Length: 220
Image (cartoon, rainbow, N blue to C red; front, side, top):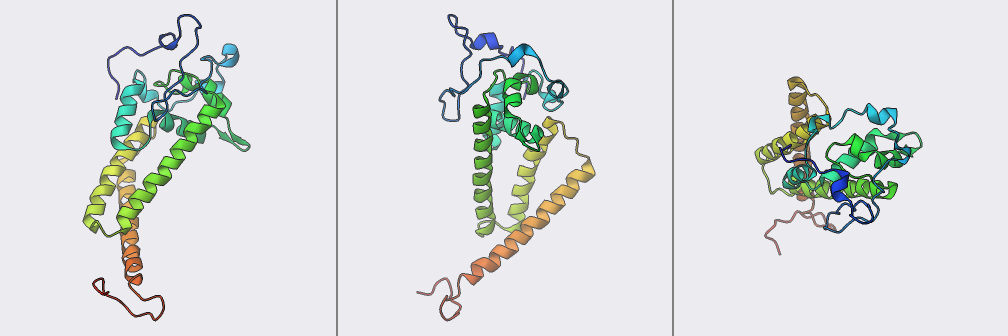
């Protein structure tokens, strides 16, 4: 996903008169007014931020290129992906360290160039979670509706699993061939159970709720 174009710096986003950093665009193309001022308080980078190793494989990657890749294959944006991962990694017993994430976002993720307020971090995480639910509902409906055969579902699961594994590998997760095959087998097994259960569900819906008479789809 990386290319040879020069990476933008914070100065590329600054207003010539005020020095203010432009707010990042949201999913609908509107500027997010909750972007932070572009610098971590005190200029100090916490040790846990300095030692953070995820996304290191994406050094030099441009946000637009990462975003385009995700848009072609998922519902999420690069912003939502990165921040959702950070929220999972910087969760403590008392909650998510959103201030730390937002103030150090460019240090944590190579393709992010602006700092964020805690409110902007929370909004991106919430957007990610909502899209996962919507995508999940869409997929399960397709799997349960009978539109696809078991073989077609296997093909679909293979394709989406490949994308998911790639994103995990980019984050720094190393998967062995055995682990990949085992995961694919388990997912395939679960999807066949989903299809079998949904077939029973659709069959049950053809029974009269009052007398239990089984009706054919062509019955009036």
